[in-house]
Image (tube, rainbow over all chains, first blue to last red; front, side, top):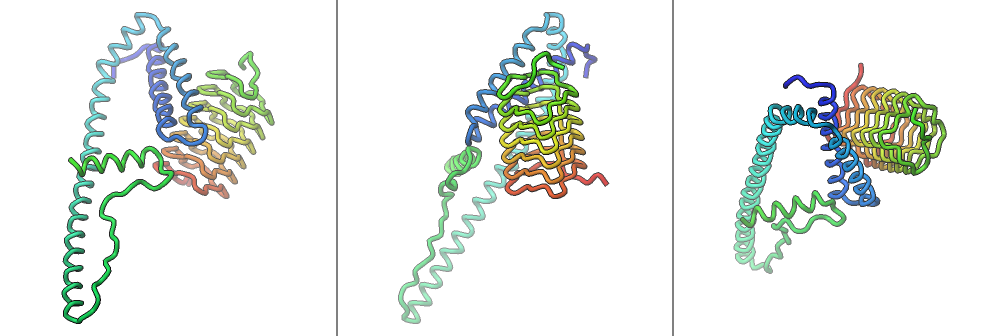
Length: 161
Length: 141
């Protein structure tokens, strides 16, 4: 990382705080719950105040900061993007594995039902009433948070495609 | 010390109260985002529903303080005394609680996701329905 002046270091600190405040604001908006709207509004104000501080610095500091962002911050974010993509691909692979497992179980279940039907017929028994197995993902549990609802919808979309 | 005295529902964004004696004050709902409250005396203070985002509270004494519903996300509480606090449904996500004293703290329903609790003393703390996912919990021994 390039050497930074004290003022630019402060600017970097402000940028970090800005990211943290924005992240928390989005969490409040996403998670909902009692008082979340009011809290999100408070965070929006914090974000705006930090932004004001960032915008009040002079041109030479901004130039030094720009150089820092270009040479250090951008490559770091780029690496994190790759990590996040890896994480997402691993999760997607788990979804695919889960779908295959469900398909295998469904075949196994159909075979078992067929075997029961044949045996009951041979023994002169009444038809077997199969269990109501819910193969679909169904709907998220009541009162589930936004994240859970989004996950359900994302997986459903993925399985459709 | 900030020229402004802290008050209930007050706006103390980035204010400096370092080392101030604020014991027993009713400060509920106040905004202390990014405020400097290092080594403050906040014994039995009422800080319920306060916004303490990224506040500096290292070494502060909050013994018996009420923090129900307060938001302490990203706050620095390193070595703070939080003995017997009531912090039901408080939010401590990503807060630094390393070496904090949380003996007998009531943290029912608190969010401690990704918080740093290294060496924190949680003896007799109540953590029913608290979210500790991703929290760093290690012994100081």
